[in-house]
Image 1 (cartoon, rainbow, N blue to C red):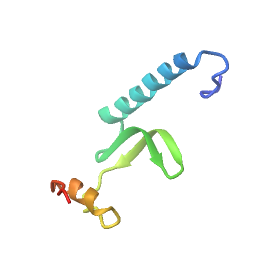
Image 2: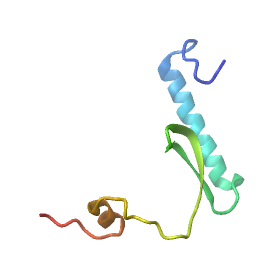
Image 3: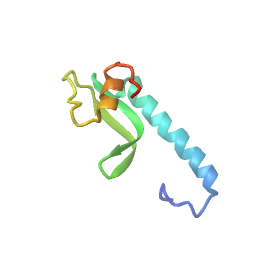
Image 4: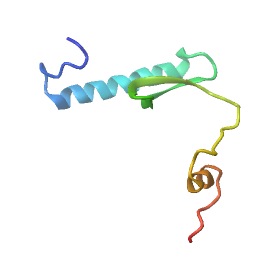
Length: 84
């Protein structure tokens, strides 16, 4: 049965199975199956797709936050918001 064929079982049952399965895959990857510096997250947006499990690589390069609104740059950089 294809993984997204919901016609043979009730939706909540499949959702529970899928959620448990995705977390188990993420945990297994993060507990040593990935090379050093890599990690996995569940249900991450990657462009227009939403991956069940997405593997990412850590970066030591500073992040360019210029594209963010000033409020979010302040939050990320640890500056408390200022009421206007």
